[in-house]
Amino acid sequence: MPIELPALGYAFDALEPHISSTTLKTHHGKHHKAYVEKANKLLEGTPLAGATLVDIVREAAQRKASDEKMAKLYNNAGQAWNHAFYWRSLRPPGGAKPSGAFADAIRSAFGSQDKLEEQLKTAATEQFGSGWAWLVLDGTTLRVVTTGNADSPLITSQRPLLTLDVWEHAYYLDYQERRPEHLGAAIGNLINWDFAAQNFAGR
Ligand code: MN3
Image (cartoon, rainbow, N blue to C red):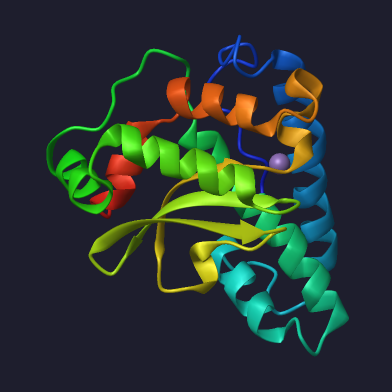
């Protein structure tokens, strides 16, 4: 089965005023769609066609150093997975912050929810060039990490809980070069902490 472009779980204008519907339509309908289409094209006629997206990313990661087509597949399949995960990491403003065991783990790793949000913002702001900022479960500890370009924790032993896209296309239409302003708005208002908590619990 080819890789699919998943529908957003909310309306294109649901993240306003923090992320505009123009940005979401372009980001989902053009950027994410293009990664999905290119990955499917590269998969045609290969033994990986029909594998799950996660397996495609992991397999291509192992073969990309010696195979140019696998390098292209890795980048496009990686971006297809990263974006699907990113849409689920966001939700309309007004949702709940973490509670229960997840909130306890956050306090134990970062000191407080505010400190986690600060650390996410700093890491995402300081990621040089295009990439992603992640909250991951590393063994039994929560950690904030960043990756460049199409990379993700999928190729590590860390379990991704949520991600933020820091490619310019994620914010340039709304904030131009002001990445920290975009991140402050997104982290403060749009993170789907329920999704992160489900991932934390391994569900
Ligand atoms: Mn993007």
